[in-house]
Length: 153
Length: 153
DNA sequence: ATAAACCTTGGAGTTTAATCTAAGGTCAAG
DNA sequence: CTTGACCTTAGATTAAACTCCAAGGTTTAT
Image 1 (cartoon, rainbow over the protein chains, first blue to last red):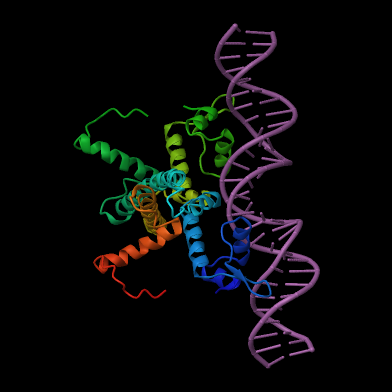
Image 2 (cartoon, helix red, strand yellow; image 1 turned 180 degrees about the horizontal axis):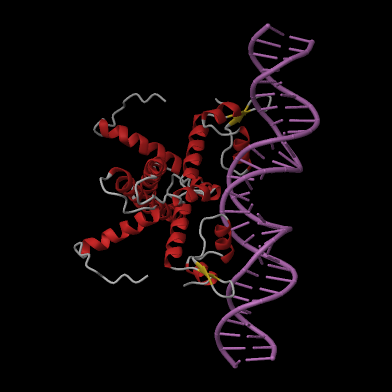
């Protein structure tokens, strides 16, 4: 059992943040001491970890409340309603994944081209790197065929 | 060339948001009309796309300003300073990727177990699904050997 | 040439997610 | 038995990211 100060220290957040999450229905301590102190157990701690991870990848506290509300009735009853929620969140997650993979590729290529390679930089900004990673896909189709194609600005 | 209303409509944001981004140094129109209207070109539009994508995957506007500031001097001069910025952003992106993959796996397993399978639900919340996806990795090592192996919590 | 739909600015207001303050109760150590 | 670190509550303040408003100029269509 953790008191509010212990749990907040564990995740490097403020005790106030935990009270804030409680007020907004995201995380309540599973019990209280005789004198009214909040007491969090392991499961509360796992729930907090989830909240913080979800937040880190761009979900709002409302989104997270939705995710946490996915508590399917064991008797298979609530499944239909829940499935659409899960699937819509899964779509969001997969869209974010695709974006991030794009970013990662661009940052890697930026890092290699600008700072690792023997030549002077050709891709010189994250934007150019992103554009060139798009072009790379097209270039494959056109078999890397860069003639003097009139580039009008 | 887009006017502010056209560009904002294109990305389903408010014109005010574009003025806000301009005030905060994220995106300025490449020119103005005679009467002072903002005029955005294709490259401005690409920059906006980048901003919105970065935002969607959990970067703050400050983070995004950092990313956009990665404009390496063609002469290879600024590379050293820039490389550490790129690499630290890459680390952030890869951490987010790992989190999201975790989420995606859990949501998929939740969807399958609860709503697709012939059996009644066993994983009944996103939290249990996340926990069980951790266990799954351990289970692989033990060659899917679910005997009564004393599971001490 | 005048209305409707757009644009300009500066500044105020809103939402989300915390973070701080004040006034007081609790608990372990000296 | 009191000092200091911790906890309680309610409510005020902050910061980021918009979002709206007022007063006025511009463009386009009739």
